[in-house]
Image 1 (cartoon, rainbow, N blue to C red):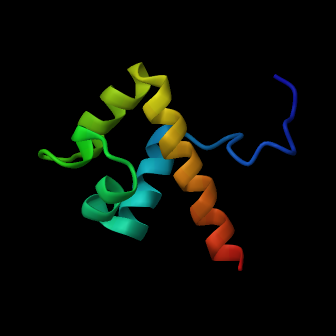
Image 2 (spheres, rainbow, N blue to C red):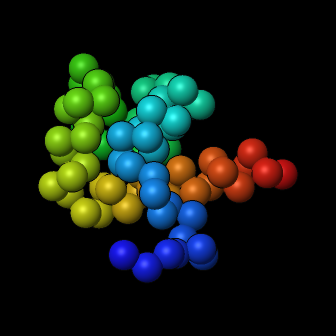
Length: 75
């Protein structure tokens, strides 16, 4: 697999992204930012991963929020 130096998500798993976002924002704020039921009703990493792995539009929103959080940290 070729290196992807310009891809900030390279080498980062979806589980790592979720854990970081939950630590930074918590489930409630994540639900406010991205209206996904798995963040609202009995949220857990396991149930969210299951949903996000099969729902590309939701995964994209979570990845975008993660990238936004990285930019906020750098400012």
